[in-house]
Image 1 (tube, rainbow, N blue to C red):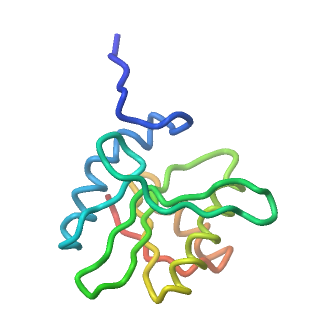
Image 2: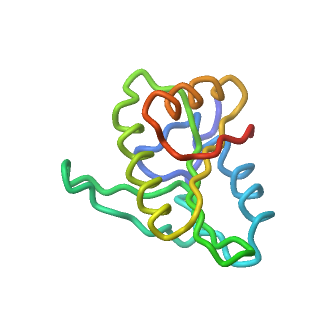
Length: 131
């Protein structure tokens, strides 16, 4: 039996939760400021409302880079129902680009090609990094 963790948010997949600490370390290395994350013990990142679906959307992690620009980061996990994720990525990329910031996609081993296909197919301006 594996103990359950209280550090994830409701609705977050266990697969994504497993990579959060590593993702937060990645973001912290790129910022002198506090990192915000949808993870226990952190301030929550800014969220947005999708006008079309009225759904709340927020990055997994946000931080201000050393250049003072806003950065939104998501952890890419393969999903059979990827439409919700595609909508989230498009909105976050649009919002951070409007702020002259960057959209980062952290792809764990085995998920990078999935993320690459989504970015290319939907024209999402995001940089993919191996996690």
